[in-house]
Length: 283
Image (cartoon, rainbow, N blue to C red):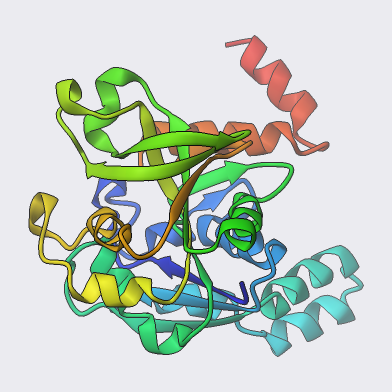
């Protein structure tokens, strides 16, 4: 899985005015922008290339992953070796490029824009809004399942029954520890019609044949081309498995989730964990 696609074309309206002049994906969780966590996960799963599906006004994301020779020279001359290594690693961790999504026509449509850049390779998809802290990166957990079963692999987690109408939901058959063979997917079903409480999370691994299915998929829920509909349409010819991943997910597309992610990451930082615990205990 040498390539990972990341849809980043959204406007981030839930974070206005913070996102008025900057991409939501560049908002920082402790000391790194949100997008960097997703790229680091992709690299840890073997990806050498990251393809952003972007929109005008988001050039800063690409700039973040470019080598900045002037900054590196300044840090080197100042003897700031720790900061220098941090900056160098960002600029060299992967080949990051972008394709444009001309109109917000849905997740399936966004992924389709990367078809030419992906080519005939198995590829990952990661949504930076979902920051997942895991001992084994979730994309790597999915890659291993795809290597074993082929086809399509999606990440799922148990969600509260009253919230299933916010997710794509699977109807699956348990085949191994934490692994389900998917028989059916439903995008944002009414609570009383959901086939399970296993909601789809923003991590996927696809065989390139998924592009053909997306191209045949019409508008679905919300008038958009949904990736869940494309997966459903591909099921007769391509297997799909769901992985109840090991890890802690934070929905950084919401303000509460973003704050929770910041606290969770800070608690893992040796320099912040103690002072943060003292601060929170005193509130």
